[in-house]
Structures are given as structure tokens and as C-alpha cells.
Image 1 (cartoon, one colour):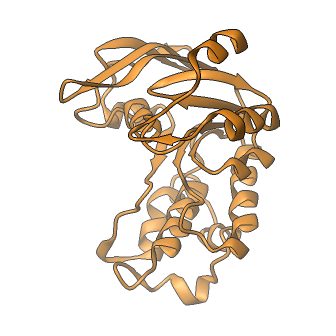
Image 2 (tube, rainbow, N blue to C red):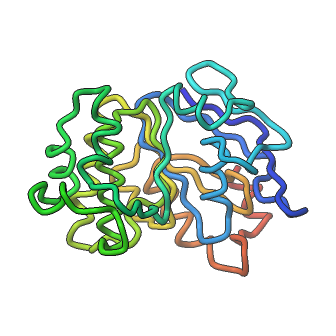
Length: 244
């Protein structure tokens, strides 16, 4: 359903995505796992077609169609959406109005969407999406908006970061529900625990997908061989070649 071929992105004379290849099947929850600085969020921006993130090389195929040159709005029309690592605030916009933007075309129940991310509708529908909400609350509201939108592909950029530990199971269940409703999930993360609900996991290193496989196998490799090192993830090249 989603295929990335030989993708390369250079920003400010620095290669961020480097000959990246990945194929994600329909109905997957596919996690992209890597330490900070390996190109995870940049990959999300390239997939979504954000300005200044047009690749110099490669192709992006979604539902059998080449969308490499599609604009952001054109990609939205194909059924794609993106959640942000740090959701924006919208002064003057209530949670109810925000959720209704996506719910109207799907007749989605916005109260149910809020409940699924662990927020009480009576407490949140009339609140504005501004600095009075915590980062974790804004993340949950953003995920609720994706539930209301019912996209074909949701690119989730660390939806569990900044979330209270006690609330994480609720977030994971919401993502599972979204997937069960027919949404392909690309889950950007540095948290190995997400492997518990993933279908497959890919490890990203210095802008490349270096391994893809069963979540627990990838988690074990990640724990043993991957570490923070400046701005990239360093892995023994000989080991990498032997594993591939």
C-alpha cells in the first residue's frame, strides 16, 4: 500500500534521508524505530509532502499511485494525514470545532473519539486548544482528530511521547482501534515499547532503513547495537552487512 524507493533528501547541504527503501503492506501498524537524529521525523515530513521537504531522488508510491510530486493538499485528498511530534495550539478554536473538521465527512462521534484517547468530553469539548492545555492533552486531542477523520494512512510522529505512563495503554488501544478500522499506521518512535502492538518494525540509521522484521527481533537488535552518538545512530558496519 505504501512503498518508498531510493528516497534521498538533502537539506542545507546535509544528507538527511539517504537512499531509503521501505515497503509497508496494507493494514499494518509499522513502527519506524531509531534514536534521535536519525531522520525519523524528516521521513514523516517527506511522506506528507511538507514544503521544503521535496526529495532530490526516489519515489513514493501510495495505493499504487506515484505521489512523489503531489502537494500536501493533494496527498491529504488521497487519504493521508500526519500528527506532529509537538502539536500546535489554536487560540480561539475549541476542541469541539477542531474535531468536527474531520468528523463531518465521516459522521464520526467526536465524544467517542475523545473517550478513546482517555479524555472526558464534558471537560474538553468547550476548551480552547491553547497553552492552557498540556502537551500531553494536545497530543491526545490530535489523535482523537485522526480517529474522527478516519484516514487511509496515518503517519504518527511519536504520539506517545509526553504522555503519562498510566495513559499509554489507552493511547495504544486507540491506535489499534484506528488500524482495525482500516487505517494503515506508520508510527515514528524512539520508544521500543511500541513494538508490543506493531505488525512489523523497521530500524532507521543515518537516514536509511537498515532492517525490517518482527517487532521483538528488531527491538533486541536495537537494544544491543544502537546508541546515541551525536546526530546519527552508529552501528558496526561489518555487523550490519552480515545481518543483511
